Length: 216
Image 1 (cartoon, rainbow, N blue to C red):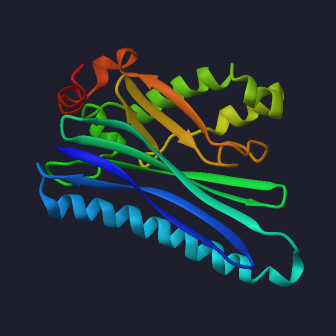
Image 2 (cartoon, helix red, strand yellow):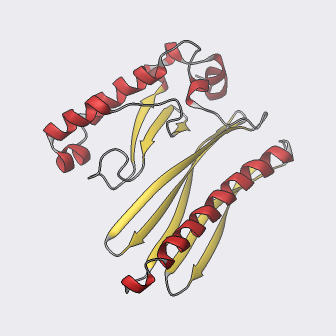
């Protein structure tokens, strides 16, 4: 049986308040080396985030008089058929500025392999163009984006939007979500923005591996 429990790091000093929640996988049906490896990857990302924030804030201590609030939250978007997909949001609130970025952890629990976008689609499929087209159509109608940037700026940005082979994504039971962290989509978009691509819209392009794991 596989279960996921929440671990937490809570600390406070003169610079920052930390509330770091992160997942810890436990399983008695999978190779423990694989489970330990995934847990270590996640833990090291949490600690690295904490260390980077501390170094950054120490260099600014003489120029500010407020605390920063650092937190992480996670979600499990897929956990079935020996495939797990987790995302962790890393957030830093300093004064009035809030910066958030996400990491995804998509793993095959049988092999320990980290799942990439190329594993979701058939060999030879130009999935980057497919995803670009789907996201551009959705982006054009997103009020949260178009209101902040404006129609003319959106058009300029769409011309340059490119989904690359290592694009961040997570897996859901009915599709995949491509996401962008703070200011990655555009300098005026501070929140994490995700675009859902349902499997039913790209079923002809999915790999046998994906079809088997998500049971379409």
